[in-house]
Structure formats: structure tokens, C-alpha cells
Amino acid sequence: MKFSPDGRFIATADRDFKIRVTSFPKNPIKGAPEIQSFCLGHTEFVSSIAFTSHSGGSSFLLSGGGDSSVRLWDYITGCLLDTYEVKDKVGEQPNETEDSNLAIADLCLTNDDSLVAVAIQSLNGIMLLACDLVAKKLSFLKVITTEKSYIPTSLAYSSSADLLWTVMGASNMPNQATSQLLTRVRIIPRSQKDLSADPAVLEDSEVPHGEKLLLALQGSLDASKQEEVLAAVLAALRVSMHKMLVKKNYSEERREQRKRGRNDKKIKK
Image (tube, rainbow, N blue to C red; front, side):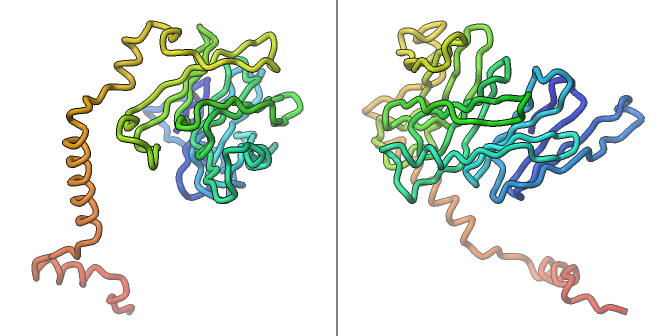
């Protein structure tokens, strides 16, 4: 869910493949929100959306989803302006396999709307796309790779420091060692003067505000407590699976009430 920069529209997306753009009334107390448009084109769930902020009065929206595509929209009309298939370039990376999940995990725009940073499942790094709002086109720029065990899941751009912050959540790290079951952060500086330069990922000691910030974000895990933590996780997983699989038990009165409410049991007159 994202608000437009002027606060007049809100875009929402879910697993039903579409993006809904809603307009707010000028007087929210007396009026009611109205659907402005539907942006239709994704063939899988929509995982990320972002409004452009400096489009000169135009109305542009970017989206990414499970169909491995980044799309540019005119959100007032719902018109699809351009589509970029990330698998065309990610498939060329040596670490990728044919059965990799290349769904878009997150995307964000730089402050001048000229670049789109894209996080992709199974990709250890970030893809950068050039965004030409005049020509209404998206084009591949480069892939910035990180260490193999680091696959970003969330992105944010810092305008004040010209830095791209990337975060990998612990729940998105399959088959990793116990010592890595923590949220991790990597920061990539962006040079506005030379987009062809390959920026280096900042070391922990180079992160703004120092290692205390990273400690708060990444957390820590005492090696002596690893077994205890894993046991707690396993117990929680068992409870969750049990609740999903077990047949619910209702009282006789509740069962009769549910039967009366079933549409297939109602007699049409």
C-alpha cells in the first residue's frame, strides 16, 4: 500500500494480480473514496509498488511481482506504459539456475526518479533499471552483486546521503547456518555523476552512525543459546502446523448453526 506524493491517491496490491488506485475526496469527512483505476497486466501476485515523485505533473507508478517483471503505469488511466522482464538479465548471472524463483521482492526509486533498484528472490545482489519518464521506458543498467549468502528482501533510498539501504530478513534465508539466522544490512552508495561506475558495498565500519546501528538492526545470537533458540522455533512450527491441519471441533449447536448458514443447503423459493 502506497500513497501518491500529493496525497490524493492510494495504490494497493495483493495476490490477485491487480493494482487498485483509489482517489480521496477533497473533503474526507463529507465524501468517500472512489476507485480511480485498475492497473491490469501482472500474471502473478504484486509484491511491490512505488509512485514517482518528480514526474512534472504526470502520474506514474512502478510495480513488481511474482511474474518476474517490473512495470511502469499511468495510474490515472490504468494504462500499462512499459514492462521489463528481469529474468532476461538475471538468467545470465552465473549463480542462477533455471528453477530459481525470480519473483520481485521489493523495489524503490531514487529521489530524482531516474533509477529503479530491484530486489529479486534468489539473486544475491540488486538490479538497477534506468527509468526514462519522458520516453516512458524502463531499461537494464546493471546488476550489483553481493556475497552469495546475502539476498536482499527490502530496499530504501536515502536522499540525504545518496545511499541505497538493503535488508535481508532471517526468514528468507533457506539452508543457511545457524550463525546467519539474523537480519542483515548492506548499504550501496550511488554516484549521480557516473552511473556506469560499479559502487562497492559499504563495510560495517563505514555505515553511517556506526556499528551500534547495525547491532540494533541485525541483532546478535549467543552461540551457547543456539540449540535453545532452534528448539523454540521447532516447537512454534509444530504448533502452527497442528493448527492448520487439525480438524476443528464444534459444539452440536454450532454445527447446526453452520449448516443453516450454508448456501448449498438453502431452499430457493
